Image (cartoon, rainbow, N blue to C red):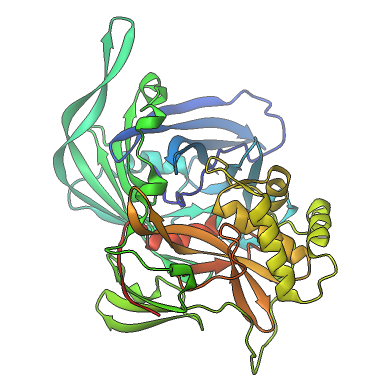
Length: 517
């Protein structure tokens, strides 16, 4: 079964072995199955699930790897995303290790693995090979092999209800899932059909048993995030043959099929739906001079959320008003310069430290930051110089995947994500506390009209307050046309978990403009 850490759109991985020692006996493959992956009805990639039986330290261990490969169209660019997760478990289903590998750009990758040590999980990453211990509660946690066999072993039938937990390494926690077995229904599956030498996919209808899985909500950087529900359909052998869920990329459907159909190329790139452009939130009317406005009030309706008013950040710049059910007004004020703060407080060290993605300790990053700020002493002017430099030197390219700031500096290509990460890292290298923020920004596209697009920018701590900079625009400040959802320091993070809060908004909101000042 497919699991839930998929966002991110965001976010894609390939698994590697958990143990470095050589295998004395060649692993025995006990399961090797393929799924064709469709997004909103169009073939976009494949998933492969393999289970190997291994002998380690005199014990039988089942190593399961789920590998996902997608080709997507984003802002007219073509990106390839790969994701996989792995578990290692005993024949009794007890998980002894978890692992993931996140492939970035230019063959870069992050390998993150965890090994169970009593009531702790020792998590190791490239920047922390010794690892750190986090709490481990094995109660109800199932490995991927146990999840593959779950319905058969329980001999499920309509009306059954039960729970299990799936460990999410990027979140460093186990997520509980409520399973409800519904009745049988007719659904489409993929079948293989030969046409001469060519093998084609044809759709057939079959009566299948419907199963619904609902994960509990998770908390990321203080924000409560609902994860997507998963629907699974089982055949007469109670094996999963079709899965479906709503993701930030769109409606994702997996069909269990042959390898040849799973790996078969999907639509030509030019015919693919552009999930970047399609994720825009349309506005009924344009905003005149949006980036010059000192205040804008947005009327927002959020669907399918228990706490809609918490979907956007609330601070001195943004406030929520006029709440009526799932609809509220978000008042956004432009703060373009530092203001006097009576009790400025102290910023945490994490906003100055070097991290995997914001690697401000990199020698090239530090050298470039020093060249940019020169003899400027004022922190705000320093940050503005850095924003301007990134704006003038970066080349827009939506096909670039996520990467550390040092690589972005080396390549000087990317979209808003790379602009924001490089700006934040350079600011930290110049001694200015910085973080990134995600949210929406006004965009008046010639073909699609006015709307709000998902965006990422930088925030810097100046004289006791957080101020925004956007190197994509290069204005030297941010006005009221940016709607903030969340922020993050990226400290102790080697996944894309900080981007997860945008999933509360993707495809779930309607926005209108009430007032512009």
